[in-house]
Image 1 (cartoon, rainbow, N blue to C red):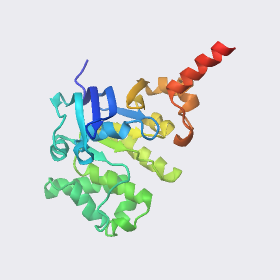
Image 2: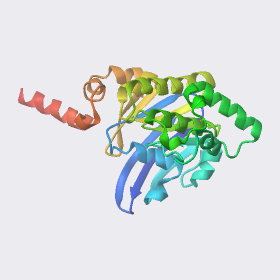
Image 3: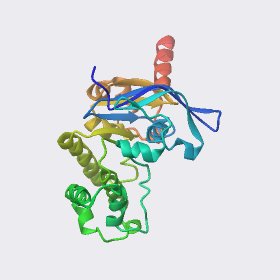
Length: 266
């Protein structure tokens, strides 16, 4: 087996010294693959991303056990700025732009460590991926639409030249046509640049459309994983994750309990 770009092994995360948010979770991202973390709101997906990105401490979270390696190097507990320098760049949920700055200035913040030539090359790539940003490059980011802000957030991440792009709910609150554009760019980056992607999503159908492999997270644990095609064909996944809104989702544990009870009573 080749060395993984990212490997999480038996990870345990707690908040406030007592609340267990992630329990014995293992996830593997192979080079050049898109891996999706799927599940309802509060399942623990974003906590996993925060552990990988080194930002748990800001929310009183800590890694209690397990390991996280990136290209074979232990990164668990490293500060966020060092993890970014190693090549893991996150696009956080809610975009979190520098709202008073222009599109151009936000992009420059993402490429702060690059020289002028590299900065110009990466900016040109971002504008080619998102032509709308080129038209709005001097506009204040806080006045952009939600979709345009998500484009800036992804563009800012790309300005850092990531080896692994981590996206937290990139489709949240966006119109379907904008989601199509965002997901098309993610797939293109993976196909043309070989960029590894770790994708956190409640929108399981859209994520599995472009993912190679997926993990379903419930109550801080992995309850099912497999190749994307296999998950898409799974009857329980199809019934309770594909095309069902987060508010109405039942867990796979509840599904299995219901089916066992139904068999017992029949």
